[in-house]
Image (tube, rainbow, N blue to C red; front, side):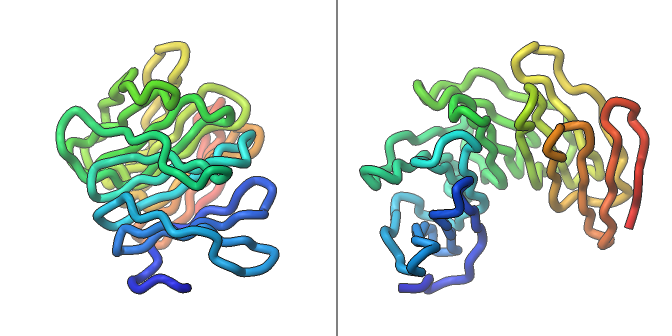
Length: 213
């Protein structure tokens, strides 16, 4: 029941009962972590899966992004694709994030260098975040505030305030093309890895580099 192509994305549900895996062939498989059985295979995407995410406070759904230019939301009770979100112009979507309560979905693109923000309930675009000057490689939501953190091949990490409309807080220099970003549990720090093999950890409130390894 395994994938026929390379696995390109993985995500584990908050309760650790489900693992979803995405492949280069556009297929997404749902696995029961207790039995290691494949419960279902979603085939709605028609290009490589680039990212998969579960919301922190919802156990029965997950979202995906793909090079086919769509973000899709899947129900793990009915096993169906109940929402499909698209950008205003065709683009390769490289990464995806969803807020704790599964209300807001964001996805980064390869070109243009934008982050699209959708309302999951309506599938409508509510904002487009611009500022990066290279492809978006990774995004992550805070679990305690309205922050979204994004990393890019422009060698920066940016923090965005989605609900207060304050825009990005600041651009942080990561000294290389950013591959991955994540926030600490209290959202006071973020870490970013770059193409040089470095991991930078920053204090957000004071804009201080805490460590580089």
